Amino acid sequence: MAYVEHYYTQFYSGEYYHLYNRGVDRKSIFKSRSNYSYFLRQWTKYLEGYVNVIAFSLNDNHFHFLVQVNHFSESDLDGKPVHELITGRLKKFFQSYTMAFNKQHGRIGTLFQTPFKRALVAKVEDLSTLIAYIHLNPQKHGLIADFRNWEWTSYGKILQFKRSFVDKEFVLEWFGGKKQFIDFHVQEFKETDILSLIDE
Image (cartoon, rainbow, N blue to C red; front, side, top):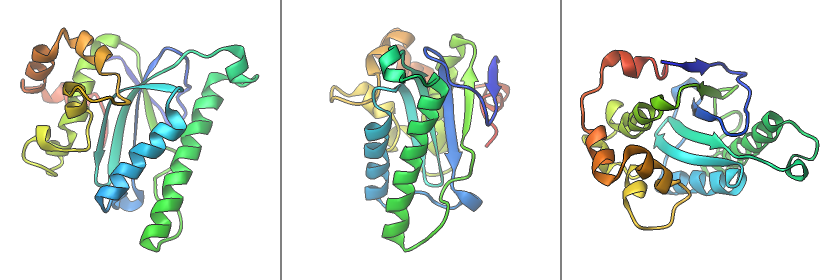
């Protein structure tokens, strides 16, 4: 699988990336429904318009996002390279969530492992498996018996008619429709395909 992982992978417009990270010492980064909701609100606040969300999953002590970096005009970039723009927005996002989480739970210090992990998805044909992997992640880690019932992934949002920051139109078109999307998620995946996606 053409999947290039590195802590310092550069961001480029139009490319797909798997972003993921966990709490320090594998500790929880979500302790309540309000934490999950706030995390997504802050994501939208700092990243909407900068990256296009294809899939996501929030899983107690870690998270996954599959995104495509948007294209920008010269005025948007203000002389900065795309990589600097995106990493700057992500840094502000992590800082804002950490500050709120620490205040609510009476803690200090770093919440997330640093630097955050990201991987370039070099072959677009790998998107289907990666999307399914992200949605199946809560079940994989024993957070729920059936991944379809986990509230904090994009799986349900893609199938609903409600407005969402997830690009559901792209995803459903990519799979060829709702039925194909659903069917792909319940097939058996080869262990080698899964292991090549991420080292958790």
